[in-house]
View 1 (cartoon, rainbow, N blue to C red):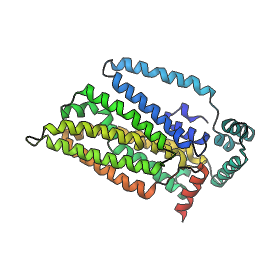
View 2 (spheres, helix red, strand yellow):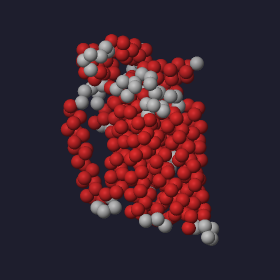
View 3 (cartoon, rainbow, N blue to C red):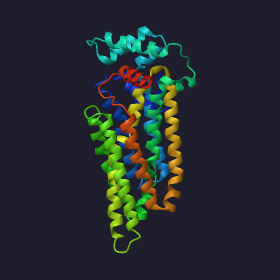
View 4 (spheres, rainbow, N blue to C red):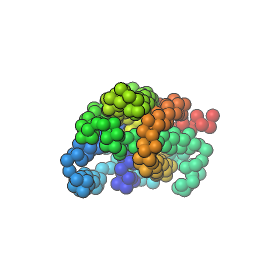
Length: 339
């Protein structure tokens, strides 16, 4: 059913289920672009209005979303899963267009669901079966590393970082907000051309370098005659990290998560991955300030090391999903683990 109503982070899952393989990446990543635009707008407007007013303004899009959700179709894959065959074909035809031949795609969806649904129940424990191990490692691993890589702390405590580096908070926030939008647009446009893995590797490598430079910048703050470099290097590194994150690591893990889990465990997997994401985000948000008080330079050196580990994880574990149907992706991941 339409899980987007209950959890905005399930929107990529729904979009992945209704789009074709050649457009899935762009459409799924477009939700991240909208998030980035909203986040950047809040950054800029938040400098001039109170947080209470900002919260009230933020409620308007939520109300619009509730109203528009009544007009979107159910996922064809969910319809066939619950046995609503007639609605399944009607919805799939409507999504693909009247002149499009859906017979092969419909057959692939049915075959895949039958393969993964054999002898399975609806219990959450089913998610931890051996055949789903690869998907689980990839999905949970990406979310875990995404949050512990330091970007959440950087975003939530940007004002504190600018203040420590001697930079105007208003100026720094505005620059970061403006640069994040075109970077996200580039990532969306390249999603189905360059592929997920190259964008992820570029994004995380960029974060690794930017955080390392930021650590050096705070080291220079303690060295006579070099402290003036701190503000310049921190601003450049923070903008660079925002750009690198927007191009890939901020949104692509959600795209991949929406692609790698079979239909029969997708709801449970989505819930688990979302729980890991927000739990780690809470940990990062809670500890970031304490880490900065301990050592500003050390904090960003640690984040640089986490991103280096993430590069290795992506290179070793994350498959390329560009140009492949959901059924092909899920079958390949399951088979590769069993081999």
